[in-house]
Length: 174
Length: 177
Image (tube, rainbow over all chains, first blue to last red; front, side, top):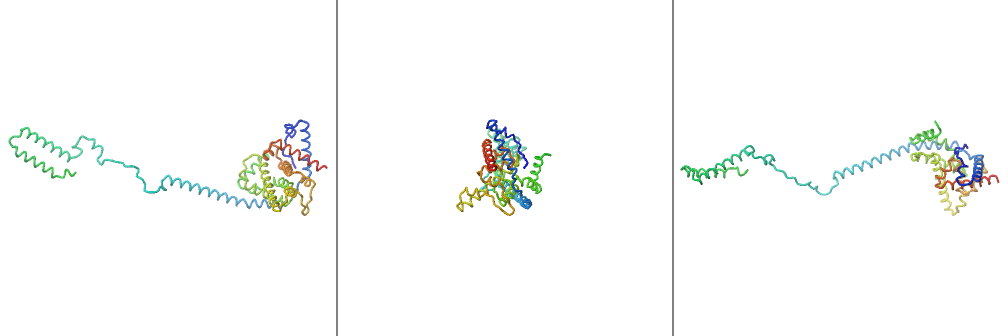
């Protein structure tokens, strides 16, 4: 048999023994290995080698199928895990009624109107009513201060009529 | 291209499930591995079985080879297969209530089959203890360095050297005596 493991045996033995002992050991090893080379073991039968090669060839497709199945199972498992985690993320497994996320209050009147001082521009009805109130206030002030010019009864009557008209109108109903 | 480059290419082919590359591995290693099994078992039929098992294992395990000495990796598998065989043999023998010493002597006891000659070496190998016999065969057929053998056997290199030296010296004496 061809020697493949070319080592410096003497150097190796000298790590543990003195030079003389190492040399003797190397000689023992080399002579014994020479005996082994002189008595070769039988060679494997050609039929055996052919059978081994045939068996390998037979096993390779089966192995390929196994690897494919293995990859398919792994992929399926990974997909199941991803789906499960996604479902958890989307709260699909939450029991009971779903809680509201909190109440948000908002005005039906826009902020612009709330913050505006220009009533006439925002609401025509309110502007008219405000004008009438101001008019009534002026008339009441006139009566109280005696500035009315001799037609007091008619003024009061007129004022009462205006108040009744306001009371009967739909303005207060919004 | 060097021999190791060739081997590396063949191993890549094996990893790609190329049956021709596996056939090349069989051609390269069958003789050495068969010799290893034969010298340990002393039986052609058992050696045939173990060699077949080795190459089937090679197909199954080739993806786990991650570089380094391929020979060391392959002979480690061969060694494991031999030990499994020994254990199964021992289990069978235990059932028959036969002692371990008898088993080991029977394992290496050469058996004659048709046209088979028992060589002197096989008879003398049977006189060595099992561990020394295996170490000598591993060194001779795997062609591994002492360092690699020590690593494979998980023992200090000095221990491997001493055991092998003692074993070879004894074998030489037996053969020359």
